[in-house]
Length: 166
Figure (cartoon, rainbow, N blue to C red):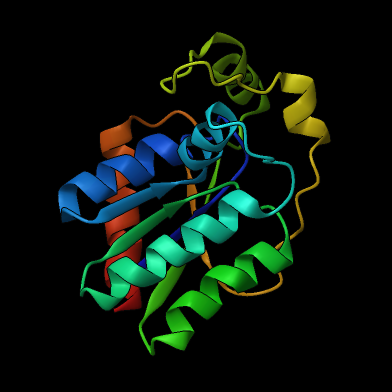
């Protein structure tokens, strides 16, 4: 199964997707880690390169029979379609999960107070987050609102929604 996480920075997407990966013992692919490694290696990162690397890693791990958790902002239709095509090309199930923080004050606080868990990774400012291109979803998907919820509560809400889709 491919679990495709999406959402703006600071919504809790990485925290929630990592918690699910740990619970499921699934392969965890985080585009921020891939892109930062590419920067450290001196490789051009602007554009879809990090996503393309993650698509290929996901495909390889799915072929091995492993569940894969994809942790990306996944902001536009083409990136979302790219993830779907990974699973569809292998005739495997997938689920799209958008993580949001509906409380703007809480979301901004998270952005302005968090620290990076990736060495030398520069986190976006609030202004960059709110001005980022992020396409409105054009298909059914799960939505998890992390505002005013702990990680454990958000994970429980996610599990409940995943169980309804099976």
